[in-house]
Length: 350
Image (cartoon, rainbow, N blue to C red; front, side, top):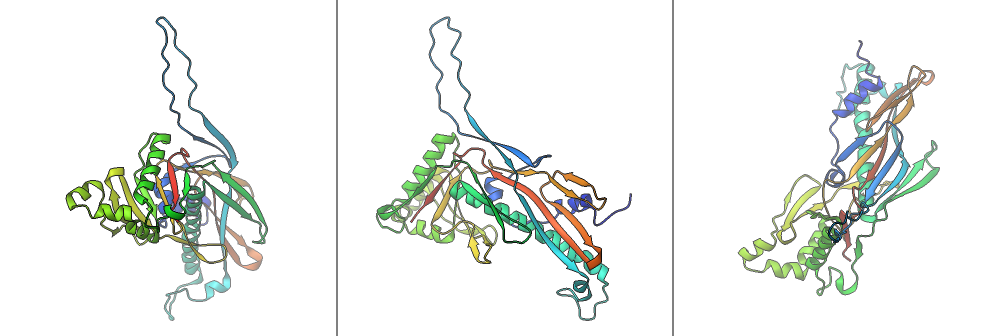
Protein backbone atom coordinates (compact mmCIF):
# COMPACT_ATOMS: atom_id res chain seq x y z
CA UNK A 1 0.00 0.00 0.00
CA UNK A 2 1.44 3.42 -0.99
CA UNK A 3 2.27 6.05 1.66
CA UNK A 4 0.08 9.09 0.93
CA UNK A 5 1.25 12.24 2.72
CA UNK A 6 -2.07 14.06 2.23
CA UNK A 7 -4.27 11.20 3.47
CA UNK A 8 -6.25 12.03 6.62
CA UNK A 9 -5.47 8.70 8.31
CA UNK A 10 -1.75 9.13 7.64
CA UNK A 11 -1.81 12.66 9.07
CA UNK A 12 -3.73 11.48 12.16
CA UNK A 13 -0.72 9.31 13.00
CA UNK A 14 1.59 12.30 12.58
CA UNK A 15 -0.51 14.41 14.95
CA UNK A 16 -0.51 11.73 17.64
CA UNK A 17 3.31 11.97 17.67
CA UNK A 18 3.50 15.78 17.58
CA UNK A 19 4.98 17.61 20.60
CA UNK A 20 2.16 19.59 22.25
CA UNK A 21 2.41 22.97 24.04
CA UNK A 22 2.23 23.27 27.81
CA UNK A 23 -1.48 23.10 28.80
CA UNK A 24 -0.96 23.13 32.56
CA UNK A 25 -4.61 23.38 33.64
CA UNK A 26 -5.85 20.54 31.45
CA UNK A 27 -2.86 18.40 32.45
CA UNK A 28 -3.48 18.92 36.18
CA UNK A 29 -7.27 19.00 36.44
CA UNK A 30 -8.60 17.42 33.19
CA UNK A 31 -6.03 14.82 32.11
CA UNK A 32 -8.44 12.08 31.04
CA UNK A 33 -9.11 12.22 27.28
CA UNK A 34 -11.97 10.16 25.83
CA UNK A 35 -12.96 10.06 22.14
CA UNK A 36 -16.45 9.26 20.82
CA UNK A 37 -17.75 8.00 17.50
CA UNK A 38 -20.58 10.57 17.52
CA UNK A 39 -20.62 14.37 17.56
CA UNK A 40 -23.20 14.23 20.39
CA UNK A 41 -21.88 13.59 23.90
CA UNK A 42 -23.84 12.80 27.07
CA UNK A 43 -22.07 14.43 30.01
CA UNK A 44 -22.60 12.96 33.49
CA UNK A 45 -21.38 14.89 36.53
CA UNK A 46 -22.24 14.18 40.11
CA UNK A 47 -22.41 15.54 43.63
CA UNK A 48 -21.63 13.15 46.45
CA UNK A 49 -24.02 12.41 49.34
CA UNK A 50 -23.57 11.87 53.07
CA UNK A 51 -26.46 9.54 53.89
CA UNK A 52 -26.15 7.22 56.90
CA UNK A 53 -27.37 3.66 57.09
CA UNK A 54 -30.68 3.49 59.04
CA UNK A 55 -31.27 1.37 62.11
CA UNK A 56 -33.87 -1.38 61.71
CA UNK A 57 -35.77 -3.58 64.12
CA UNK A 58 -34.71 -7.24 64.44
CA UNK A 59 -36.05 -9.32 61.55
CA UNK A 60 -36.46 -6.35 59.24
CA UNK A 61 -35.49 -6.77 55.58
CA UNK A 62 -33.72 -3.39 55.49
CA UNK A 63 -34.53 0.03 54.11
CA UNK A 64 -34.01 0.76 50.42
CA UNK A 65 -31.65 3.71 49.96
CA UNK A 66 -31.53 5.95 46.92
CA UNK A 67 -28.26 6.06 45.01
CA UNK A 68 -26.35 9.34 44.96
CA UNK A 69 -27.70 11.36 42.09
CA UNK A 70 -25.95 12.76 39.07
CA UNK A 71 -26.93 15.16 36.34
CA UNK A 72 -26.76 14.40 32.63
CA UNK A 73 -26.59 16.98 29.88
CA UNK A 74 -26.39 16.16 26.20
CA UNK A 75 -24.23 18.40 24.04
CA UNK A 76 -23.35 18.55 20.40
CA UNK A 77 -19.61 18.92 20.91
CA UNK A 78 -18.53 22.37 19.67
CA UNK A 79 -16.35 22.40 16.59
CA UNK A 80 -12.90 23.97 16.59
CA UNK A 81 -11.49 24.37 13.10
CA UNK A 82 -8.37 26.35 12.27
CA UNK A 83 -6.81 26.37 8.82
CA UNK A 84 -3.82 27.66 6.88
CA UNK A 85 -3.64 28.42 3.17
CA UNK A 86 -0.52 27.77 1.11
CA UNK A 87 -0.18 29.35 -2.33
CA UNK A 88 2.20 28.80 -5.21
CA UNK A 89 3.68 32.26 -4.51
CA UNK A 90 4.56 31.17 -0.95
CA UNK A 91 6.57 28.24 -2.31
CA UNK A 92 8.57 30.32 -4.75
CA UNK A 93 10.03 32.35 -1.87
CA UNK A 94 12.62 30.98 0.52
CA UNK A 95 11.29 29.87 3.90
CA UNK A 96 12.34 31.59 7.16
CA UNK A 97 15.88 30.56 8.03
CA UNK A 98 16.52 29.16 4.58
CA UNK A 99 19.80 30.09 2.87
CA UNK A 100 19.70 32.77 0.20
CA UNK A 101 21.34 30.24 -2.09
CA UNK A 102 19.13 27.28 -1.15
CA UNK A 103 18.48 24.66 -3.80
CA UNK A 104 15.31 23.36 -2.18
CA UNK A 105 12.39 22.85 -4.52
CA UNK A 106 8.84 24.19 -4.04
CA UNK A 107 7.72 20.60 -3.46
CA UNK A 108 10.15 20.24 -0.54
CA UNK A 109 9.04 23.57 0.92
CA UNK A 110 5.39 22.50 0.62
CA UNK A 111 6.03 19.37 2.71
CA UNK A 112 7.81 21.45 5.39
CA UNK A 113 5.11 24.12 5.46
CA UNK A 114 2.45 21.42 5.78
CA UNK A 115 4.20 19.82 8.77
CA UNK A 116 4.62 23.21 10.48
CA UNK A 117 1.01 24.17 9.81
CA UNK A 118 -0.34 20.91 11.25
CA UNK A 119 1.76 21.40 14.40
CA UNK A 120 0.76 25.07 14.78
CA UNK A 121 -2.95 24.44 14.21
CA UNK A 122 -2.96 21.54 16.67
CA UNK A 123 -1.27 23.76 19.26
CA UNK A 124 -4.01 26.35 18.74
CA UNK A 125 -6.65 23.72 19.58
CA UNK A 126 -4.74 22.68 22.70
CA UNK A 127 -4.50 26.32 23.85
CA UNK A 128 -8.26 26.66 23.37
CA UNK A 129 -8.79 23.61 25.58
CA UNK A 130 -6.59 25.15 28.28
CA UNK A 131 -8.64 28.35 28.01
CA UNK A 132 -11.88 26.38 28.40
CA UNK A 133 -10.39 24.66 31.45
CA UNK A 134 -9.43 28.01 33.01
CA UNK A 135 -12.93 29.42 32.54
CA UNK A 136 -14.54 26.26 33.93
CA UNK A 137 -12.30 26.30 37.00
CA UNK A 138 -12.81 30.00 37.74
CA UNK A 139 -16.40 30.59 36.62
CA UNK A 140 -17.90 27.10 36.58
CA UNK A 141 -18.75 27.58 32.91
CA UNK A 142 -17.30 28.54 29.56
CA UNK A 143 -18.76 30.28 26.54
CA UNK A 144 -18.52 28.88 23.01
CA UNK A 145 -18.51 31.64 20.40
CA UNK A 146 -18.70 29.95 17.01
CA UNK A 147 -17.56 31.97 13.99
CA UNK A 148 -19.07 31.66 10.53
CA UNK A 149 -16.93 31.61 7.37
CA UNK A 150 -16.80 35.43 7.34
CA UNK A 151 -14.91 35.33 10.66
CA UNK A 152 -17.38 37.79 12.24
CA UNK A 153 -20.84 36.21 12.63
CA UNK A 154 -21.07 34.49 16.03
CA UNK A 155 -23.28 31.80 17.52
CA UNK A 156 -22.94 31.80 21.30
CA UNK A 157 -23.56 28.85 23.64
CA UNK A 158 -22.74 28.59 27.35
CA UNK A 159 -21.58 25.26 28.83
CA UNK A 160 -22.43 25.47 32.55
CA UNK A 161 -22.17 23.00 35.43
CA UNK A 162 -23.92 24.86 38.31
CA UNK A 163 -20.64 25.45 40.17
CA UNK A 164 -21.05 27.18 43.57
CA UNK A 165 -17.77 26.72 45.49
CA UNK A 166 -16.45 30.24 45.00
CA UNK A 167 -15.78 33.08 47.42
CA UNK A 168 -14.85 36.73 46.89
CA UNK A 169 -12.91 38.36 49.74
CA UNK A 170 -13.56 42.06 50.32
CA UNK A 171 -12.66 44.72 52.83
CA UNK A 172 -10.84 43.39 55.89
CA UNK A 173 -10.85 39.88 54.40
CA UNK A 174 -8.95 40.87 51.24
CA UNK A 175 -5.39 39.50 51.30
CA UNK A 176 -3.78 42.94 51.00
CA UNK A 177 -5.41 43.94 54.29
CA UNK A 178 -3.35 43.43 57.45
CA UNK A 179 -6.34 41.93 59.27
CA UNK A 180 -7.00 39.23 56.65
CA UNK A 181 -6.38 35.52 57.21
CA UNK A 182 -5.06 33.86 54.04
CA UNK A 183 -4.23 30.62 55.84
CA UNK A 184 -7.72 30.46 57.33
CA UNK A 185 -9.32 31.10 53.93
CA UNK A 186 -7.39 28.23 52.33
CA UNK A 187 -8.15 26.02 55.30
CA UNK A 188 -11.87 26.75 54.93
CA UNK A 189 -11.73 26.05 51.17
CA UNK A 190 -9.94 22.75 51.76
CA UNK A 191 -12.50 21.79 54.39
CA UNK A 192 -15.38 22.57 52.02
CA UNK A 193 -13.90 20.35 49.30
CA UNK A 194 -13.22 17.51 51.73
CA UNK A 195 -16.71 17.74 53.17
CA UNK A 196 -18.54 17.90 49.83
CA UNK A 197 -16.42 15.58 47.68
CA UNK A 198 -14.95 13.18 50.22
CA UNK A 199 -11.49 13.81 48.74
CA UNK A 200 -8.44 15.77 49.91
CA UNK A 201 -7.40 18.66 47.65
CA UNK A 202 -3.65 18.57 47.10
CA UNK A 203 -3.02 21.40 44.61
CA UNK A 204 -3.34 25.18 44.85
CA UNK A 205 -2.46 27.26 41.79
CA UNK A 206 -2.40 31.01 41.20
CA UNK A 207 -0.41 33.75 39.47
CA UNK A 208 2.94 34.97 40.81
CA UNK A 209 1.32 38.24 41.91
CA UNK A 210 -1.27 36.34 43.96
CA UNK A 211 1.46 34.14 45.46
CA UNK A 212 3.32 37.30 46.54
CA UNK A 213 0.14 38.53 48.27
CA UNK A 214 -0.12 35.21 50.09
CA UNK A 215 3.49 35.26 51.31
CA UNK A 216 3.13 38.85 52.57
CA UNK A 217 -0.10 38.07 54.38
CA UNK A 218 0.27 38.28 58.16
CA UNK A 219 -1.37 34.89 58.78
CA UNK A 220 1.29 33.23 56.62
CA UNK A 221 4.20 35.49 57.57
CA UNK A 222 3.67 34.98 61.30
CA UNK A 223 3.74 31.20 60.90
CA UNK A 224 6.94 31.44 58.85
CA UNK A 225 8.54 33.20 61.83
CA UNK A 226 7.96 30.21 64.10
CA UNK A 227 11.25 28.38 64.91
CA UNK A 228 12.29 26.33 61.89
CA UNK A 229 11.45 22.79 63.06
CA UNK A 230 7.91 23.74 63.98
CA UNK A 231 7.47 25.78 60.78
CA UNK A 232 8.61 22.83 58.65
CA UNK A 233 5.89 20.69 60.19
CA UNK A 234 3.27 23.30 59.23
CA UNK A 235 4.44 24.77 55.90
CA UNK A 236 7.56 25.33 53.82
CA UNK A 237 8.52 27.66 50.98
CA UNK A 238 11.31 26.91 48.50
CA UNK A 239 10.41 28.39 45.09
CA UNK A 240 11.65 26.58 41.97
CA UNK A 241 10.63 26.59 38.32
CA UNK A 242 9.06 23.43 36.92
CA UNK A 243 8.97 24.87 33.38
CA UNK A 244 8.95 28.41 31.91
CA UNK A 245 5.30 28.94 32.90
CA UNK A 246 4.87 26.79 36.01
CA UNK A 247 6.62 27.15 39.35
CA UNK A 248 6.31 25.36 42.67
CA UNK A 249 6.74 27.88 45.47
CA UNK A 250 5.89 25.90 48.57
CA UNK A 251 3.78 23.46 50.49
CA UNK A 252 1.30 23.72 53.36
CA UNK A 253 1.80 20.40 55.10
CA UNK A 254 -1.00 21.10 57.53
CA UNK A 255 -3.43 20.97 54.56
CA UNK A 256 -1.45 18.50 52.38
CA UNK A 257 -1.42 21.26 49.76
CA UNK A 258 1.29 21.87 47.14
CA UNK A 259 1.45 25.50 46.01
CA UNK A 260 2.09 26.44 42.36
CA UNK A 261 2.32 29.62 40.32
CA UNK A 262 1.20 29.62 36.69
CA UNK A 263 2.10 32.42 34.31
CA UNK A 264 0.69 30.89 31.12
CA UNK A 265 -0.85 33.38 28.69
CA UNK A 266 -2.89 33.27 25.48
CA UNK A 267 -3.75 35.79 22.78
CA UNK A 268 -7.46 36.67 22.90
CA UNK A 269 -9.66 37.45 19.88
CA UNK A 270 -8.46 41.08 19.97
CA UNK A 271 -4.81 39.98 19.92
CA UNK A 272 -4.19 40.98 23.55
CA UNK A 273 -2.23 38.64 25.81
CA UNK A 274 -4.31 37.38 28.76
CA UNK A 275 -3.43 35.18 31.74
CA UNK A 276 -5.11 31.79 31.98
CA UNK A 277 -5.34 32.44 35.74
CA UNK A 278 -5.82 36.19 36.32
CA UNK A 279 -4.19 37.94 39.25
CA UNK A 280 -6.09 37.77 42.57
CA UNK A 281 -7.51 34.29 41.96
CA UNK A 282 -6.37 31.04 43.55
CA UNK A 283 -7.75 27.62 42.65
CA UNK A 284 -7.60 24.84 45.24
CA UNK A 285 -8.58 21.40 44.05
CA UNK A 286 -8.26 17.67 43.58
CA UNK A 287 -6.05 16.92 40.56
CA UNK A 288 -6.48 14.21 37.94
CA UNK A 289 -10.28 13.90 37.97
CA UNK A 290 -11.71 15.94 35.09
CA UNK A 291 -12.17 14.78 31.49
CA UNK A 292 -11.73 16.04 27.96
CA UNK A 293 -14.41 14.50 25.75
CA UNK A 294 -13.93 14.55 21.97
CA UNK A 295 -16.80 14.12 19.55
CA UNK A 296 -16.36 12.64 16.08
CA UNK A 297 -15.51 14.83 13.09
CA UNK A 298 -17.22 14.29 9.73
CA UNK A 299 -15.71 15.78 6.58
CA UNK A 300 -15.60 15.34 2.80
CA UNK A 301 -12.48 13.63 1.51
CA UNK A 302 -10.88 13.65 -2.00
CA UNK A 303 -13.01 10.64 -3.00
CA UNK A 304 -16.00 13.07 -2.72
CA UNK A 305 -17.57 11.03 0.09
CA UNK A 306 -18.20 11.93 3.72
CA UNK A 307 -15.93 10.22 6.25
CA UNK A 308 -16.27 10.26 10.05
CA UNK A 309 -13.18 10.14 12.26
CA UNK A 310 -12.96 9.41 15.97
CA UNK A 311 -10.00 11.34 17.33
CA UNK A 312 -8.83 14.37 19.26
CA UNK A 313 -7.47 16.44 16.35
CA UNK A 314 -8.50 15.54 12.81
CA UNK A 315 -6.48 16.95 9.89
CA UNK A 316 -7.62 17.65 6.36
CA UNK A 317 -5.64 18.67 3.29
CA UNK A 318 -7.58 20.02 0.31
CA UNK A 319 -6.61 21.61 -2.98
CA UNK A 320 -8.06 24.35 -5.18
CA UNK A 321 -6.63 23.38 -8.56
CA UNK A 322 -7.89 26.46 -10.43
CA UNK A 323 -6.18 28.88 -8.01
CA UNK A 324 -3.10 26.77 -7.13
CA UNK A 325 -3.97 26.74 -3.42
CA UNK A 326 -3.43 24.07 -0.78
CA UNK A 327 -5.42 24.32 2.45
CA UNK A 328 -4.52 22.51 5.68
CA UNK A 329 -7.16 22.37 8.44
CA UNK A 330 -7.34 20.82 11.92
CA UNK A 331 -10.76 20.07 13.39
CA UNK A 332 -11.57 19.12 16.98
CA UNK A 333 -14.82 18.70 18.93
CA UNK A 334 -13.86 19.02 22.59
CA UNK A 335 -15.83 19.39 25.80
CA UNK A 336 -14.06 20.03 29.12
CA UNK A 337 -16.09 18.45 31.92
CA UNK A 338 -15.58 17.89 35.67
CA UNK A 339 -15.94 14.52 37.36
CA UNK A 340 -17.62 16.35 40.25
CA UNK A 341 -18.36 20.04 40.74
CA UNK A 342 -17.22 19.64 44.37
CA UNK A 343 -13.61 18.85 43.39
CA UNK A 344 -12.31 22.43 43.56
CA UNK A 345 -12.81 25.81 45.22
CA UNK A 346 -11.98 29.29 43.91
CA UNK A 347 -10.93 32.24 46.05
CA UNK A 348 -10.88 35.78 44.67
CA UNK A 349 -8.54 37.27 47.22
CA UNK A 350 -9.13 41.00 46.62
